[in-house]
Length: 436
Image (cartoon, one colour):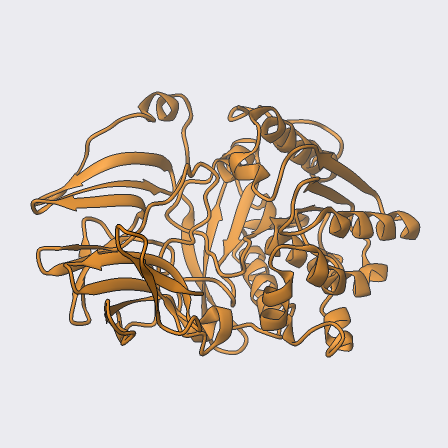
């Protein structure tokens, strides 16, 4: 990416050689810039750090020096937008850093980091003035509110108090597993009312470089209020745990798949999840992984794959990021590495699928194009697997987050109907208590 500096007369010059990935720029006085990005030394999994550089020469100096990324990749479907440009104020940089299941605000200088306010939140935006900090933040069981931080962090608004008084949202239990290769993997289990073991959905997040944690996601609570437990796993590939943890390039469907299956086995072993009432679902990368899982396991009663990928070969040339994302994540191009592209495609393993599968896709999704849904649906139909395809007109990859309200409502209804049909022996016991 290229970075240009322009004066008010329109005269501009390029800073750097365009070889870095850059996504945010902030002024530090008149002579330096703060730039968020990375040098691509580990491809797309390289940590995004804050660098200072003079405005007249490209000489970036890392201000973070920890194995984490600037930004917030926590999963949420009630986010109106994120404003996380670092701010220089009174001798310190202020920036949000994604750390495990949280994305708090930090104050930093010379590589030293200090949390501002609380560490167990998802900061969505902030500003700093005269030593006072205002921010918007959410948690697992509360949507965004406005907070101020001076000597302490105080909530200024109660915009969601009415909603929260009508529904009794639960917090997820946090636990970790020791994966079979010895690495700790963090999980959350959101249990419904009643006694365990529960009908349980293994919900796979997208990215894969995102994570579940202290951010509000209405869909999870909707399913939970309708009698389902949710197992949320920050598997290998997730954001917030460092580059080595995040780096599953050219190994999709391997360690990520094992982390998910081993976490599910642990939830069953603990008596949380009913092994006879399991479902799997996810969107984007989570849709890819749902497709992959049901091609490699028969333990699920139902699957819901959303805005997913089944064929990396066709995905390469039909999406907005395929031409650079796929070579980085899968390895090479389809014409250079055709066997790898096909082996890593769920479509190559579709003849193994037995799980009833609901496919949800938008007809204007250019991140994971509609052809992915059509290919998987056609294959399942030919193979005699129970399947349904629902296409949402005029929607894109962000249907679940910013789609038209009528389509978001219909989407949740379709999801719940499919789960109830296959997880509750045909009886619809749902109360729709969180239906929009």
